[in-house]
Amino acid sequence: MKTSAWIHRYAARSLASKRLFCFSYAGAGASVYRLWHTGLPSDIEVCAVQLPGREGRLRETPIASIPGIVSALLPEILACADRPFAFFGHSMGAVVATEVARALQSSGGPVPSHLFVSARRPTGVADPDPPMAHLPDAELVAELNSRYGGIPPEVMEHEELMALLLPGLRADLSALESFQPTAGTRLTMPLHVFGGAGDARVPRAHLEAWQADAQGSFRVRQFPGGHFYLNSQQAALLEEVRATLMPLSGRAAGTSGSA
Image (cartoon, rainbow, N blue to C red; front, side):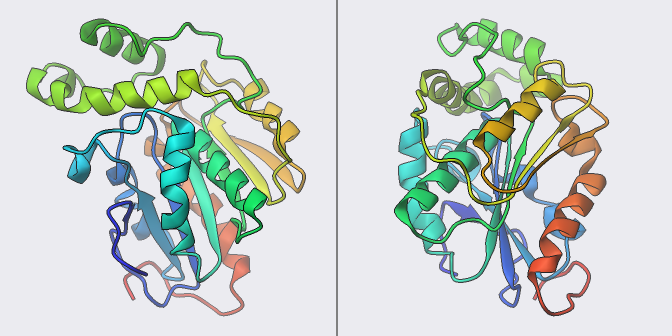
């Protein structure tokens, strides 16, 4: 697998038989998934997607449209498609992962063996909240934290840090709020929809609505917690992912570790 600014591997596993590409939520970077390799067998290589405008790519211009993100990511994913792979996307990441999967499917190229979408309503369900990407910085941060939480107080109080993070966050919100999905074919790969049982913004009805996008198998599972349940329920979530992906391998795999 070639070195790429777009794909971050916190533990390279060259002998792994499959890859799990992970897509972050709005404003976040690849480090959201920095510890996932410790909870998965060595036969699964975690590849965290790093978009421009965050973490190691902080000085790069963020991409403020979903089609633009998908177009830029496609060749990066295809370059790593030399073995079976799956997608996991949380919140905004669920939208990006789904649209990349659609693009791969439409092109007739390799497609994910499984698509995991997390804490996000499908594009066919209207956003009940007004847009916020245009709000002034302080109002934007307050509104975002009111809706979803997840911004640590020490980060909110650090003006210089927030000034560095806000361009990427605002671009992501603009991408989501301006996205106009077109009617397309249903997804052929198994679709696994996860969410937090206490996530008021993404209730179970929104998770179940993903079935309209599924042509293949479909299931919903909720975990204890709110919108960012993937942090508090990481072990249970990774066990669910492991149990789903390991049957793809015909050989036994060891416990977590680098190869």
